[in-house]
Length: 350
Image (cartoon, rainbow, N blue to C red; front, side, top):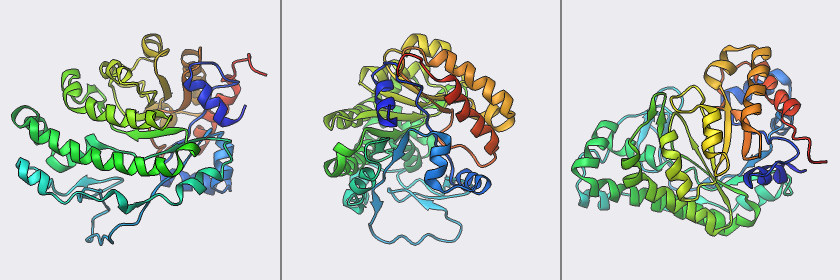
């Protein structure tokens, strides 16, 4: 099987030749791994056995000059500072009225240049499962624009303001992804989006509030992907088991990255309750096993995860975090992917 065939078979909840593998990594870890193994980007993907490749639209909008100390700026003008993605330095719609929301300077989807997406995807000659579309982190943008505590209060006091902000934010993301798919949908397999609705202790909002505010916009993105005959997979950190039934109801095809150390994320229960309805991607513990373990303990835990998650298909193996962090030993990541190859076979496909 090609990597693409393997992934699409898993999405169909059938058993391929072996469990597909996924590798998401931070820039810092990726640079470290290339240096330690003396490999280039594609050689490293091959060494890990990654069955996915990802293509991106390119920002081509107005130049943005960031002040000293600012590490990034979101499409919606929120500047961030600090380690990694950093934290917002302000919440520009914290006190906004409905009129303020509609007057806000929202980004133009045309600022994202999609002209390179098709050539980038075509270069892989349909050998790999291609991820595309905008990341679309509308939940995080809502928090950035309002501030988290303020956002929760407005969900009760000014729900119409929440609705209006989300409409503008998701309008932008949907338009960008639609442009990507108009240009290259037949070369893309999976619409990959990301919103972290979970914490270590469970969902960051109740099922009722999730259904009221988040689910309609998540549905919009799922239906957009379906319109272009793509699978739709969402990255979601933390414990969010209570929200999975709603995600299945709207037709979400896959969930990444499945953190087994969070409340409610028992792998056997997730597989039993939802494994025939939605693909799970990840589940090898990044927080403890990959960072603090040894190659032997990583190999052992990866095998245990595979024993639970692989039967019947519907599973992609990988780390339980969106990006493997720099402090993770390269030898442990190699042990995980080697174990996926060693123990992930189904034995029923030639």
